[in-house]
Length: 190
Image 1 (cartoon, helix red, strand yellow):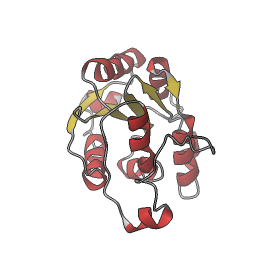
Image 2 (cartoon, rainbow, N blue to C red):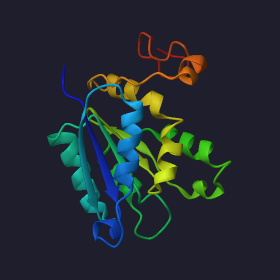
Image 3 (cartoon, helix red, strand yellow):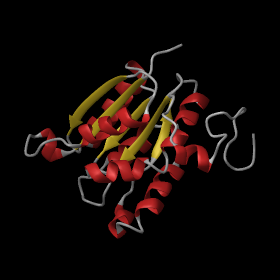
Image 4 (cartoon, helix red, strand yellow):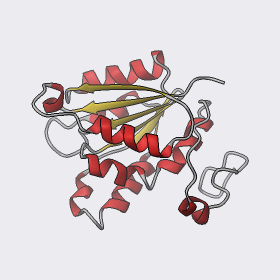
């Protein structure tokens, strides 16, 4: 069984320059600690909003460090320097737009400005990459509706098992979520 490695890449000019404290890494690591049952190693780094820098780090963590999951935070809005989605799209082999769509649909009723997010997701080799907003509160709000699908993507791509802590709401919503067989694509096919 291969080792589970998760990367947290904070994309922020100001945090990388030390203008303000990186709070994204802590928000993501706390979320992972609460949700992930499997043992994993964590890589974390803060980089500026530079598309070439983000692309290089995503490639390194996917190809060399062998991350199964990379969560980027920040750089998903419409500001001129926001480029995490562009960097992600440039390095992945398959785009998984449903993740960004689900995150926006879930958060929009509470935070109408969440519609400004351009977050997306995709796969590169055995690595699943998801863009998240930079706001620590928004990180959990965006991960909640999509997190249960992440182990399935990693498994389909040939990565190590990612086991989640099962909550009562999870089992009530779909008792077969963690016990299915086959590669159901979510659209009625296998």
